[in-house]
Structures are given as C-alpha cells and as structure tokens.
Length: 216
Image (cartoon, rainbow, N blue to C red; front, side, top):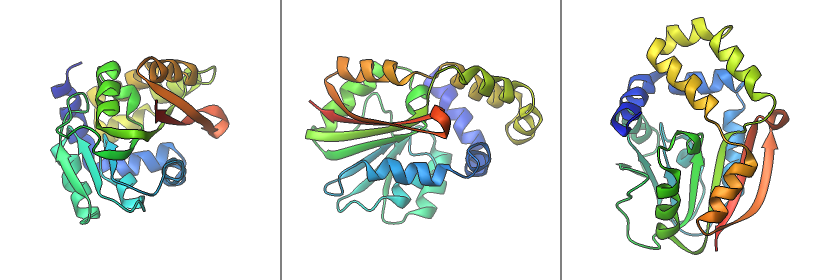
C-alpha cells in the first residue's frame, strides 16, 4: 500500500465516511472524540493528524490555532465546510510542513494504524511538538475480541460495506483492522521515540483505546 493509494481510498469514501463511522461505532464516535480532546490541555496550538472530515477540530475548544492535515483533498473539502475557523492542509504526517515546536498538542482519531511509517511519524510529531507537549491517540485495540470484529466485517457487515464503499475500499478497512495494534505495542512504539505514556483508557469492552503521551 502506498500513500497515493491511501489518499485515493479516503477520497473515494469521503462523502459517506461520517455516516459509516457513526454506524459502526453505534454513534459513540462523537463521545470518544470528545473524551480524546478532554485528555489534552486547552492552551496552545493544536494539530489534528489525519483529520479527515474535521470532526475532531470542530469539537476542539483549545485557545490557540486549530490545524488539521490529511492526505485527501476530498476529505478536507468537507472539513473546511464544517469549521471555518480551522486551518486545513493537504500534508504528509511523516513529513510535516511545520516549524519545530509549533504545537502544544496533537490528536489522532482512528489514524495511527493507517500510518505507513509510524516511526517516521513519531519523529515528526516529536519535532513539531513544544517541549512537554502532549499527543492523544484514539484507535482500535488488538486483543481477543479483534477476530470477532474482523469476522463481522467480512461477513454480516460485508453487504453494507460493499454498498457504501465497493469491494476494494471495504477490503482496505478490513486489512487495517487486521493490522491494529495492542495498547502495549502502541506504548512501546511511543516510548522508543521519546514519548512518555501518561494515561491509557479503554472503551467498548476494550475494543477502543485512548492513549495520552507526553514529549519526554
């Protein structure tokens, strides 16, 4: 999978993405994203990585700039229509167009497992974060229930997935779920790149994790 392929997939599903997320999370995604933001300090500039349709920044109440980056211009068109006060850029999370120490906080909602080079991203995140800056991640946890979720997507939910996205795009989301990481794996990757894990929370019987990390 290349960045261009990822960009094309998310551009193709952009108009149906919010509906899909609400459906598969039983309409809990809104609260999870609010919980994610509650983990972060209110002061300073905030960067939302893989911002998609802009839902996280739309909910953000931080007192500084609200900046979102994504590979998909089609996603960002929707984001810009939602949050006029936010700044959205087509940019690569692994090579961000920002000066060192530009942001006090970074958020990622259902993005981390999609990153093609997480190590490169974490180095960039550390670079653009201010000293003692925070990063919060919301994503799918890999544990004993994960095979059940994959089964649901491959079989009971497949007709809906094909109807909404088509076979190639639906296969991508199944594959991304298969590549999800456990909280221990995420913690290890963060710590290896100079972050200190402050807090780990779980939702939906452990299916979803929220992790708060601080730049060491």
